[in-house]
Amino acid sequence: MLTSCSADSAKNSEETAVIDEATVADADAADTTEETTDEDSAGIDEGTATVASAGSADAADELYVHGDDGYYCIYDDMPEFVPTAQKWGTCWLYAAAASMRTAYYKANGKDIKIDPIDLLDIIYGGGNDKEDGFVIKSGGDGRDIGGDQDFVTATLSRGFGDLTLDSTMNLDINDRETIKNVLHNRGGIVVEIPDNGDGKKGVYGGCFTMNDTENDEYDHDVTIVGYDDHFPKEYFKEEAAEDGAWLCYNSNYRSDKPFYISYCSNFGYVMSHNVTDKYTEVLSYDAGSNIERQISTGESTKVANVFHKEGKLAAVGTYSIYDKQDIKIEIYDASLENVIYSQDAVLDYNGYHTIGLDEPLDVKDYAIAITYSEGAPVEGEVTDGGWIEFRTISESGQSYVYIDGWKDMTDSDIKDVLKIDYEPNNCCIKALYK
Image (cartoon, rainbow, N blue to C red):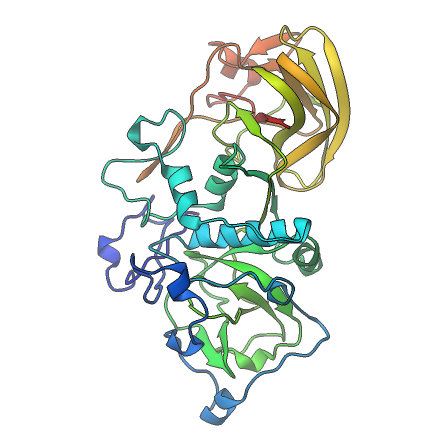
């Protein structure tokens, strides 16, 4: 699902750029025009949002005050985080930036600046001449066509500025305890929600609320920043089946108060991003992992990337679509004949992982091989998604799979050998330097 939330889209849906027409919708974002700035949008009174009131007039005037039990909000820990309103159709980037900033704060005790519009340029920049990655076709405008959190993971794991994506966790919205633990220990969590106008939204006691158990057309990204187990079910425009709500940063609403979304409401993907400034450079052949593109050669699958760059190798990056799988990392010489380092690891969640080496290595011409117990992620073929094309480029001598010896992933018979019906292109292994 690709998410775009642009101003006035409810009135002008026929003019809105879409990807695969059914997969992208635009939600109404009040007053989020090009002239909006972070300074202009911070801390504006919540009454400016256009949502319907819930309950009686007397009840709506009652100020809701949460208790200490069953309540948590990152805003209380991180006063540096000031909610801002999005520009254009970029809710997916504002939500991602909030997740990354809060995660960095949790890990380092200080805030960093991540401009969502800079992320837009990094992900979609380069024009039609870009060799690999996400390319906007002629006539498309990246500010309006939206995007997906997988775009964020695939692009930023290759490094951006002084930062690189350290990890992305794919979570289950029904596993509340895990989500709560992630909020406490890791930071904010991006969730995809339906945002088809105000039919499911309300205001109660100064709290914006939403409970939508019917719509599964997800067209808006917000960031979970907390929870309230005792938020009354009656405080939603449509009464929820149980008490409790996720507290969210919503870039559609220019308020310093969280947006309350019922535990019962429908959600799409649920993802937590973390960034780091520990690494100086990332080497990567793949432009991202197509989630469906996994290769298997038996009980385990061994693949490798050959790199040529002098420096100190400090970590290895890769993906997993499984809740848990064991891997073995081996560093070879460039001939893929001699192992010079070995380390076992566990990929203990579905998503992108960075595994630090126990002993950073001085390298120049070398290969990183990973043996996966479940399946090895590969880049996958070029895909065309309406306004956006996912491009890949794979050359001989870059990626290999072990099948009774090392076989180049660009060999003409690779699809037959692997018994797959798509071009696998590069293996998803990244080298991170200290």
